[in-house]
Length: 314
Image (cartoon, rainbow, N blue to C red; front, side, top):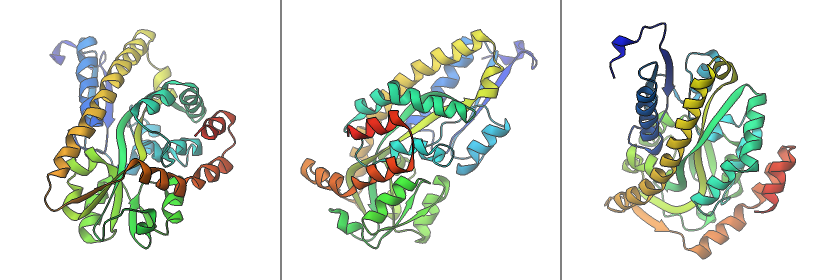
């Protein structure tokens, strides 16, 4: 794209930082969004992407968005747990059986309700992007039952629901930014962590973990988000272009995430120093039963009929 033909006064800059690597569902989707927007706007919109926490550390993204220093972010949904406790719905263990159920929630009444609640907090929800389902890794022992978690120390994202889940099994948890996780594992600050296949593979977390349980116990997704203030400053035709492009990229991102989850799991299985145990469907049911009390714990913490009714169906 030849930006020399567009003056600085005419050009809209969208700064888009994220904490994961470039070769992840989020990283690839951010790149695709950048390419499409810059092409479709004929250089009038420039999207600057900053992977690997290269612009701001993990927990600074939302703050910098609110200050107007960046215009778009796609943080883990758990990052909004303090701003919007209802967002922790997506952290409930075994809430979804597959990616299709995730997409149905995002595009349905619950997704619309979360969007409405975020708007009241000053945010414009543009989309929900998938990463995949979370797996457990640790450097102590194979984990086959929830009881095997007892006494271990895990890094978690900032979510009371996730903390409650580990406490139920007698495990300890430490909240750490994602960009500090590799070093924490390397230094032995934590013994284990929960993450998606693509994050475990791309960040090479397995180099400091001997055991992985293919548990699919939780979902990890992202709120693609901006502020109401930035959004309201845009011309109508720009909003339309951004929304149509985001919708297109979101569909592509979800398909890519599901494909990468399969491909990169095969790559992890080839790691000689990583022992992988796959939970059977029966074992997953037993795990779900162990952690199901978090559902009631969560609904007791919020006051929202739409979300409470959805949880009752699970």
